[in-house]
Image (cartoon, rainbow, N blue to C red; front, side, top):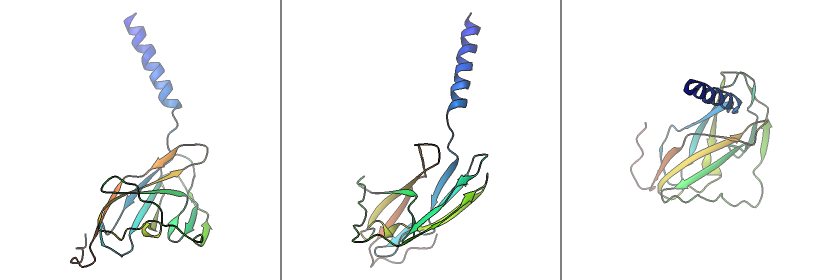
Amino acid sequence: MRNLIVLLLLGVTVIAYSQTPHQPFTITLSSGKPEVKAGDRVHVDILMTNTSNQDVNCTIDAHGGLDMNYGYKVVDADGRTLPEIPRNHPLPGSIYPCTLKPGESRSLPSSISTLYDLTHPGKYTIQVTRGYEGSDELVSSNTLTITVIAPDSPSPSPK
């Protein structure tokens, strides 16, 4: 009887896992300059990788150096989410169709300082999210830390 219960629980677990939707891609953030001077533009690279066995839409909605298909979140060292820079008019933009085949990746340089004021010295964490077709879920990236130093500090060392 005990073996039957164990087998039933194992079967239910396998069925539940197989019905759980898997996210079709991953997002990885990186930066060639994890330390920048206040006032310099802050750039991050967004790497989207198709981890599914089907094509994935990676269309770019480019506005001011950012793909607006991503949700951006920047948090300061005190845990406060930075507000977006207010605009009197929308940033000009363009749409670039894109499809990732299974296993393919696409890297997109993004100017995060277009959307957020990163001119004050401190540590900031950045994370992006993106939705995908057929789901209300969002895929989240890793969290990337950028340090903004005072403009009169010695130049950051290349890393």
